[in-house]
Each structure stands twice: as C-alpha cells, then as structure tokens.
Image (tube, rainbow, N blue to C red; front, side, top):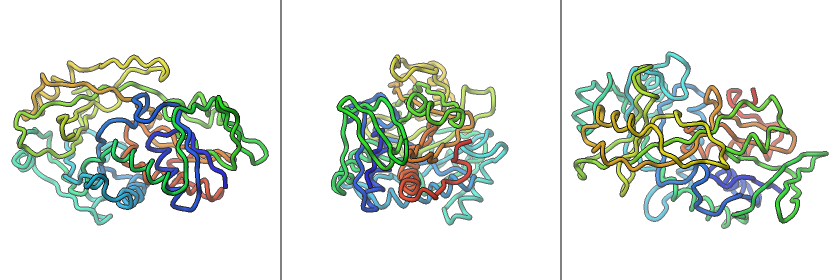
Length: 368
C-alpha cells in the first residue's frame, strides 16, 4: 500500500512510525527543514498532562502511553519524565466538560488505575514551596513532561529503520482524491498514493478546506508566548502544573513544566493573537501579565528572568481534536495546544483509519 504523510511535525511522524510498525513504508513530506520553528512541534519539552475527565481523552492517553513506552529510552533517558503533575484552581479542567472539577478528574484517573491524590493548599505548598495554590490540588504522579525534541529525533529514526522515508523541505501545494487514487502535488511533480494522511497543523484549512468544505470546523491559528523563568533555588524540584483560574482573574488558564537548562516554562493557554502562519511575526505578547502572574503565584521563580518562546496553536472552537477520513484522505487537526502528549495515540488512530477504511475514531473526534 502506497501511503504519503503530509506534514512532518510530531503528529505526522508519530503516524508514519505507527504505519511502519504495521509493515507499511510511508513517505513523509514536510515543507520546512528538519528542526524548524514554523510549526508547533519544536522545543525541548511539552506537558504530559493527564488531568482529563472525558473518556475519549483518557482512552487516547492510554494509547499514547503505550506508544511512549514502546519508544523506550532515548539518549539514556525515557521520553517521558514522570516527575508528577499538580493541578489546582477553581476553573474547569482542560478538555473537560463544563463544570467538571478536579475531584471528578481524580475519580476518573483512579477508575483507570492511575494514581491520583487530592492535597490541601498547605500540603501542596509544603511539597512544592516554590508555588502557591488556589484551593485543593490534584497530584498525578504518573504525569510530567514529554521530551519533545528528543521524541522528534527518535520518531524519524524509527521511521527510517522501518523502511519509511522522510523528505524535508518538500512543500505540498494540493491534494486530491479521485476514483480511489490520491494525488499529492509537489514542486518536483505529482506523487500518487492509495492514501494520504494530512497532519499539517496551521496549514490545514488552506490544504483541506476545498476538499472538506463546511464539514471542516473553523480552525484558529494563534501565536502563543509562554516563557521560561529562572528558579530562585536551583536545587528545588518542580512538578508540571495546571492552574485552572477563575474567570476574569487572569487572561486564561495557566500551564507549565520544568525544562532542564532553560528554567520553568509558564504560559497562558490559548490567548495569542490570530496569525497567518506564512506571515507570523514571532512577537512575544502578554509578557507583562505573565510576569505579574509569576510574581503572584510562584515565589520560587524570578519574574524578571522571563525568556519568551514563540509557538503556534491551531484550535477548534471547542478545542476538540479532529481525527477522521474522507475517501483516501485521512486527517488530524485542531489539537488546540494540547496535542503533543497524545501524539503516539493520535498516530495509532490515524494509522487505523489508513489501514481500515471502515475504522472510526471516537465520536467526539469525528468531523462535526
């Protein structure tokens, strides 16, 4: 079966790796060079956050964890640093239905056999004195950080070892599907395939809008500006974290994680300016508010040490992912700033859709 994967970010590479595990030899086409910063997969770390209550996300996390474990150690260390995740606040957990609080999330995790502990603010502060806490906190030991850059290198290595191919600096201008044949247009000529997987992030609407029409949900591309902050005590330990803030108190919910050698990453979730991905300004925004937030909630960080980072989100209005198939074209989109940790699971779902045209993703992930 000839399969082309368009988009060499983490979702495309995870899908291609999963296809090689099933005996296929996919070709990955990525418009930019290896290690580029134009998309959403660059950088050293991503939050491996399991604070979800909805079953379709928890199912996807199970598949993702299987994939992360199968990737094993890279450069002498697992790709997941499971130093734990602490979530607190009075808002609503990311990816969860309105009104779902942290106690309900803890219950869902325990039902899945995952450790989860509710701590009082005093108990949490005693454990992590560099943080302040907004109400009771949920501690998830089986969470932490995904080593993003290392994962990208390892996925490419596994694809090549499995007989696949990754072509960097190979833009795709159009994809079409007719009579069971998919045509992928590149500057070097058309490529013909039995199936194409489209994991093109911020470029989804330009490439797929004409094919899917109104079935494709609106996708907002924003430039986000988290920052790394220096710990005041370099010997202190840090968990990954979520702060679900009360509406109106801060611009948005807050997330973050320790990144060795760079500090502690802190960011507002999904408040960046909407941008054209081909004319992105790479401009840091909301930095004064972010420093003020760190001053208020992180006594263990120096708020004046901010080193901003630029990344993109491609978000649906309800932040639900899109994993589906039309004809010979399979697509994954709308990961809304929370997709990286799920990547091996998403790759497995997209590979299912490629191999078996009758397969379907969970209803919440299908075209609206």
